[in-house]
Image (cartoon, rainbow, N blue to C red; front, side):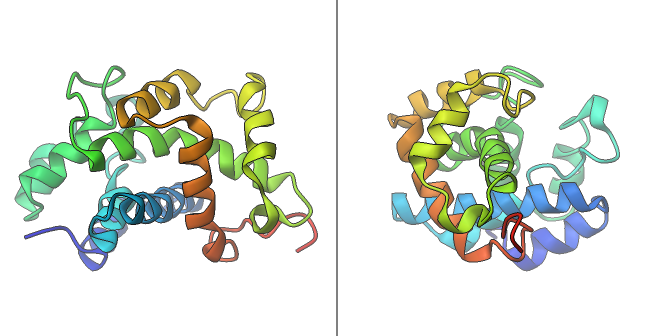
Length: 189
């Protein structure tokens, strides 16, 4: 059975308690929902996979994704969905190459949403009026949100056959309606 948001949230609650990690999961989830719409895929399913992607990170930051496969399979998560989650560690944590649009999207937006979030936090109106042009200026500045791996983003976009600006635009628009929930209403709020 495909992963649902309800199941993803229940599983994450047992492992993820730090607010910044929960916000990251939400950011990735909303960006994944937008990517699903772009590809004409099941939005809730992609959002659920995005929400659950860092399942073991808080408890095992040095062993991220090593405590995911067995645990999620035992919890009844589809092998396909577990593989998608594992594939976001390609080249860093494992050699599970993203192959489907879902996997390639997760691989790309995990890091991309970090830069979007950092951009929005600096703006008076936050995410609500963030445009791709402004995002791209910050993306090109390697010192800005330096922990977000731009090479992973570029590799993911190449896998998707899309450019960074296009993927960023989709993700920004997918995240905007949730700006209040994800704390990105800006410095004026």
